[in-house]
Image (cartoon, helix red, strand yellow):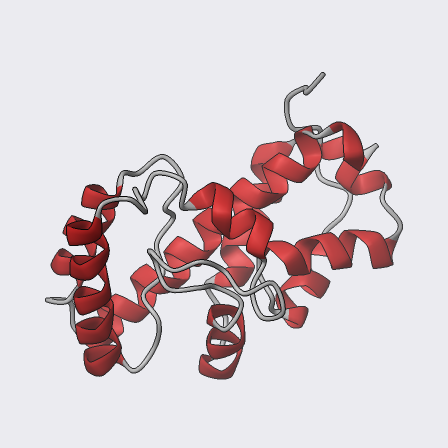
Amino acid sequence: MTTGPDVARFDAWPEDEARRRLLTCLDVPRWADEVVAGRPYTDLGALEDRMTAVAATVTDDELARALARHPRIGERADASRHEAAHSAREQSGVDRGDADLLRALEEANHAYEERFDRVFIIRAAGRTGRDVLDELARRLDNTPAAERTETVGQLTQIAVLRLREALSSEEST
């Protein structure tokens, strides 16, 4: 049986366990350390606010590290490099049987990487492949600074969803 996110679980985890779990949400050690250091949290909102505030301060090197843990949208995750189980669930709305969509995503990913010199990241959970493609096309028009901000925001949304999942699962007890 799955229950809702329980911030008390996060507060009760030993420091190394809390840090390890945070790093599967966003692979930025300084971010994880600062979120853990903020314990205890009064509620889930306070924890998510802290996650967001600290994520807003990631450096370019930290951003590159975090992005390296995410596969391209529409591609299967490589378990040795990516958080494969998370990525597969999060991208479940992308119909891998739609060859035209996959080709369009591949082309748009390539254009994005040429423009911004990094992998396109989006909170894919709850979005269809067409939604993702539309967002990718929209974001190609961003300035580099605006796109960096959106990228960090999307990584943060992914991290929050992943932590909620960890706090909601029976495994986390």
